Structure formats: C-alpha cells, structure tokens
Image (tube, rainbow over all chains, first blue to last red; front, side, top):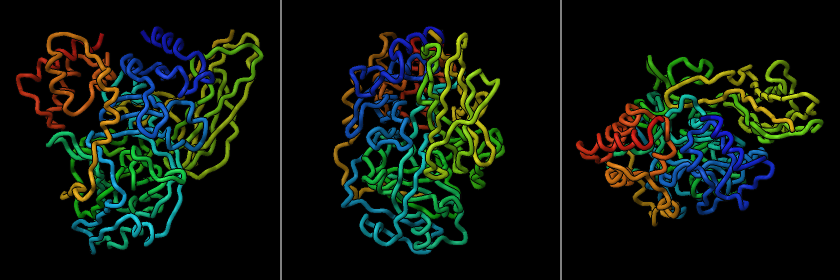
Length: 406
Length: 96
C-alpha cells in the first residue's frame, strides 16, 4: 500500500526542483507519501484570493498549506503563507471600524482602541518568528489520527511588526488576581452552539516581550487570511495561540475552560518532557500544547529522488524550535552511522527559521540514505521515532531520505 | 466568559464564499446514507474533511467522529440519522 502511494506520488512530481507551484502542474504538487491516500488525492493546488496556489486541505473552513518549495527562503512570502481556520464564519474586517477591547474581571481599567491609536500609543516592535500549526505533519502519523491531514507546510516564518501585548496589558492594569489572559477574534461558528474559537495564555507568557499584537507581516498589512487587521504573535508557541482578527482581550482571575482550551489542543502529561508549562490548565492526564519542539525540513531533496554517481547533492533546508534557537544541524548520508555538521545560514533571531546546507558527492556503489537532525541551544534533538499522541502533535521525527542512484 | 462578537465590525459577505468556488467539485461515493451525509455535514464544513480523513478510520473511529460533531460541535443531526451517517462513512471511507 505504502509502496504504491509512494510510486504514485513520485509519478506526479519526478523531482522537487522541476516543480513550480504555479506551473502547469498546478493540480499536482509534492506531498509526503506518508499522508492518507484521501488527503493526497484531495490535496491539489487551489487558489484563494490574494494567495499563490496552495495545497488545499479543506475548502470550508479554509485550510491551505504552503508547498515545500517556498521554504527554501528563510522568510515565507505573505502570498504563500499557510491558512488555518477552525470555524467557517470569517468576516472581512474593515480596519476603519475595527476595535480592540481589553477588559475582564482582573483588569483595572477596561480599554478600547481603534487601529491608529493602538499603533500610536505603544512602541512599535519587530520580531521574526515561526508560526507553526500544532497539527503540522499530522497526516504523517502512523497510525493515522483524524483531523486536518497536514503535510509539512502548515507553518511559515515572517517578520511581524506590532506592539507588545505587555505594554497594552499594563495600560489596562493586570490585577494581582489575574491568572490568564484570554483572546477572541472576529471569526465565528457556522451554526449556533459550536464553541467559538477562544484561547488563553498564562500571565507570564502574555507579558513576555515576544508576545505581540501584530499589524504587519514582512512589511505589509496582514493578509486577510492571516488575521487582518491585527493578530497575536506568541513567539515560540504553536499557532493555536496566535489569534487572528483579534477583537477582544480578557484579563481573567479564573482559567478559561472552553472547548478550544480543553479538551482541544492537549498533549498527554509529561509525554514531551521539555515543553513549557501552563500551570493553570494542566491536569493529571494532560496539558495544553505550548512551545514548538525542535525540528527541521529538508527542501532540496525528497525520498526516492534519483541522483547519478559522482553527482554533488545539496542537503539544504530550514531548522527551528520554540525559541531557544538552533545550535547545530547534523547531516548523515549513510543512514545514521556517521554525522557531520551542516553549515548554518544567517541568524535571524532565536524564534526564526535557520537555513542550513551540506553538500556531498554520491560515491560509486553508494545508496545514500540522508538523515537530518536539528539541535537547539538547550540540547534538545529531533526525535529518532514518532511520539504517538491522540491529536497528532509535535511530529519532529528525523527523516530518512533514500536516494536512488541511476 | 463574556466575549461579544465584533458586532460593530462591518461584516461583509463572508470571505469563505471565495473559497467555496471549488467546493462543488467534491464528490462523495454513492451509497446508502450519502443523502444524510450531504444534508447534515455541509452545514458546517466542506466534504473534503471526509475524503482527507480516509481510508484509515474503522467503524468505531467514524462513530466517534460523528459523536464529536454532535456533542462537541453541536451539529444538529437528528438522533436517528447519526448511525446511518457513521455507517456510510465507515463503509465507503473506512479502513480497508
């Protein structure tokens, strides 16, 4: 079964380098062969307003994934940046009438801002940070778990411009009894009764200077699909906290206990021992997903790619983690027997993608199996094998990329 | 938590309408129960959610998905329709 799928996937796209996402191959695009057959069949390139053709995971609510080629750049283009919604009621927000309310039972002074005042009253800051969906690579879980069957592209890296959430919260006054800061956006359920998408953060995380209310992405206003006119940036934590079309901030004396906090977006307690804690949300059984685990993506070659004897092969891609920063990327071309350090590209900050590159020559009689593992500044390494969890989060398995020598 | 929707926002035509342009291409397999799937599931999401999640869920897995839609997402599915929907999904989009 797997063999057949891999064969079909190989037919669709003989080599990544020949693939331009906007080319006449439009309906076909490289996808990880591990995905469910149905996800591969449905996952053609589709165009939505303001975006290049992206890999469609669902039309409604819109879930669209960035094709692999775009990750060759450390900064992801706005028009190629992935799109993820939980709910299909998505208003086009008018910046002129948009308001942000800050209140809650632990706020000293409730406030309301329009866009010009919010931008004027607080210091403007820039931050390069990876936004990665918690379920990125869910479709590569074996056995499969239900959900949006993402491949590798439910993520992106951008330079975000906005104001610090901390500055805004301090203006409203965070009461001594505050335990969480909650967020709501303008999107809404299709039917009455479906839980609205709301999220919360622990107070220290909300006050961290890498938590922003952003208005711009790569120097341009946020695209509609990425949260226009303002979204939350929670550098290092997974995309679920990065509320789009932000309209309301609540300083709370009690934990938020609605569907999207619990039971949704949970990982089994202690299964990933190094992730950040969220004390007010943890139970004996589980904890919220928090920071991104160390990971990498090879963009230059894929499993089953043909190479020739004597050819120089690039092993290039990007590495990232939850904010400790990438220390090393190691490459093996012999299936894990020996490892060498890849050359790292420019450091755009500890929350950013970091590019890496290693070149090797395919020797006579070789059947290269390329493996890549990123290591962060704390010493966390990508996982040698899949850590199963019910929702399919934190897939950071070291890949085995087999090259076929012609 | 009292969170008001941005009623003050000018809510134009749903942007999701732009996306719907491709949704009509999605074809479910014909079979007993398909009418109930079409009638119920599309009120909240496009049917590619079914295709993308196939073929790996067993009978229990599809039954759990239907129950999640009813219990967690409050899908207004008539009690007598839940079983035929789950059976259709397991039969046509279930584990092989």
